[in-house]
Image (cartoon, rainbow, N blue to C red; front, side):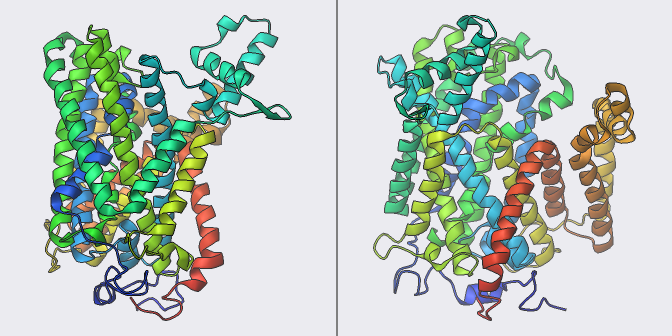
Length: 589
């Protein structure tokens, strides 16, 4: 029985969407006011590379290598395989429903309105919160680059208020405890002097803001506002520059590789390798951003699937090679730095190349900002078209053909917090939102086309998972027991109370960290049973399972923050979106 119009699971039909393509319809900025179609497969591939080759390769790859050693290169392969399953499902949806909205639209047609709202809200977090981090990281690279050439911006104009005040308080506490100023860490001292030297506004509050982070956000938002054609031209240029730098890094670095540095290959075991999941996966979240531009592609049904796979393959090869070069040039123990590529070349006595890498990182971060600032307004635009957000979010500029109001709001959402905040957990938080979207997209294919019978221009190849999924799960369980026995033992001890008794901690404080993993085990068993009964398609099921598994590696604290964000979104949905939904009002398409 189909869902009723007032149901939380009411769905938009694919036929209705295709019969009324919003990109070409009036009412969104007037006649001819739809989004302009300028993107080719080359441009889309460039956008994917722009999003993927960014913070991951220039920053977070260092900490991941410190935790996992050279074996992190295999984690990039594993994550790429997981992304490949998701990319195939994204590609079929893009070929079936070539409109803006990405995973939000795909969930609307498969799971229904409530799931669509949840994933749309999660994507807002993914893009906005992720871009705050990228903007702050860009500011750090940019100010470091200026310092290296003798141009010094006052520190109180290059640091968030939150960071400066926290560092100041930490140093004051040390001194009040009788310790000298030298006892503070370099980062604490930097924050202390930034706060102490900043102009006082009132009542002890100081003017400390990250002006470069705000400035780059404003500049990128202005570019995105002007037009998709201008944005893709800048993106393509930045991608070419990045690829040249990465190629130089590989070509030069390979001559400084010492194979002895690759031993031991996985010094901290599988557990150490998996600590880098969030950092590694953060590098791959560009696929969703590509699909948000479907209405601006010249031939989305043909070009989107190709671009997703091209970007995935190119970036995975580069990540694996760069990881092996980095961990071969110096010991993995030295890579826990924020600028690992620049660090290793300085370490081997190539300061000029180190400086060149630092310059390229500035461009790399800017291109990531560009892609995600493109993505979020198009999510809001689509949600507004469906009535779940106020109509103003669907406004398209009559001359520039961009989602004008949504673009400005996106800039404010990213730029203003970047002035003040230092959000340490947002990489994990962003990864949870992305993995959640990927899992729903894989699940959506199992709903709309579980046996690969769609007549779309691209479909996920159908292979029955009836026997393969149970075999693969048994094999995965054996490998986990064989090579990461400690994880299983810890799971059992945390669950039966042994750990709590031994450490004296409360049972729940210990057990709660195993909740995501236990939920994954139960979900895997349920998915295996349904796959066996229904003979579901293997590849989407594998995508669903791998994404759910990666989510378990991100920690209960991040899950808690994610659930709080979802509760805020549900409050907005039930107070505005539910009653204003076009489906609730009987409007189809």
